[in-house]
Amino acid sequence: MSKAQQNFSVVTNDAEKPGPSQPSSVSGGRSLRSTTKRNASSEDTGPAPKMAAKVEEWSIESICRNGRRLDLNSDQPNAASVIKTLFKEVHGSVLSKLNIHPLDWDECADNELTPFLETFNKRVRAFRKNNPRDVLLSKKNWRQKDAKEFRILCDLACQLAIPDPTVLNTQYKGFSNETYGETNIETLQKILDTLDVKEDDVFIDLGSGVGQLVTFAAAYTNMALVRGIEIQEVPAGFADENAWQFKKLMRHFGEKPRPFQLELGDFTKKETETFLKEKATIIFCNNKAFKEPLMLKLREILQFCNSGTKIVVTQRLETTKDGRTSRGCYFTASADTVSLFTTDDPKKGNVSWTDKIVPYYLTTVDNMKPFREAAKKEKAEEQAQVAKQLRAEQRRAKKEAKKQ
Image 1 (cartoon, rainbow, N blue to C red):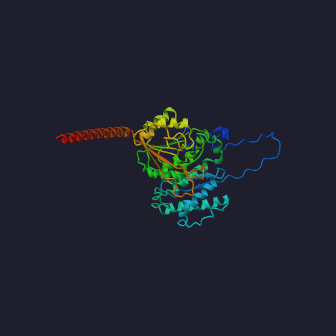
Image 2: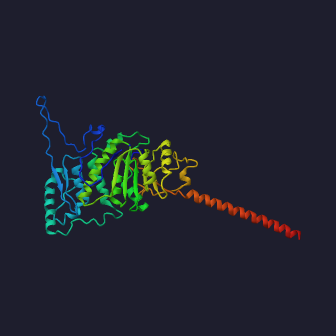
């Protein structure tokens, strides 16, 4: 996830919308969903162009109450793989109810999908007609601790949005504030469970990359607002497409995510700085590679957050470099920092950029802590002074007693 964060918003209403223009460094300014083709001039010379493969239109009827049909085309990046994964991991449980034998999803050819989906859709429509009050797929367990379905949908949205994920690795300078890397969804889920998020919580991811953690938080929790900000144009462009695909997949299952925003921006700018200080209640920042100047700027902003604000980071906020602690740092005086879990499986990494386990730290802002500490110190000093006076009086009393 990139580490520093400028003002481009993702629209988060449920209306269908055309996709954004992909940054020129990736697609020459064309939309990610553009299907524009240039026709060859009649004066062109050379061999005749190859016949284009037929584009299959794939539709999947919804198996959930209030769900919408999902439409994909065979020329969309990873569309066939997405359909196979949906049936293998989610839709598969209803096939027996429809008396349909599943395909071998790991081995079947893409051209097998069209006849299969025609049969599937016909059976789903017949089921609805004959059982108007019933649903094929129950979602009552989707928001339990496992939340497998939401993780799958977030991953599939990214597959549809990003044809080649390796392009992301070329957008960042190595070993810099902008080093790209993602926190695993499972890790974020465990963090959210640990924080025990509430309906009035406002979550922001500083350096949100393509937005996968933001979309998951919007699906999994009931928070008031989930927001992500990313400084690099290419991942922010992919994030826009990712948000669109994510909402389309959620609608297919009759699900509506919590309000969320994905933006191209810089968290050190005034608008976001004000948001962090005044509105955010949970701040997530993968700041492992932040250099000292950016760490100082981050601390300068976060020291004015409201009491109770929870800040989750991968480099402790009171440090400037690994193993070094800043003297008189605000976060040692006005906040409490504890180590969070790493992972349940020490053999499985919790981030994308290394197989090693990366620790997470939770800092909870407590603006009254310095005053309590000062009052506690003052009380201790008063008690020490009283004790000192009492000992002096006792010594004088003993001396007087000896004289008598």
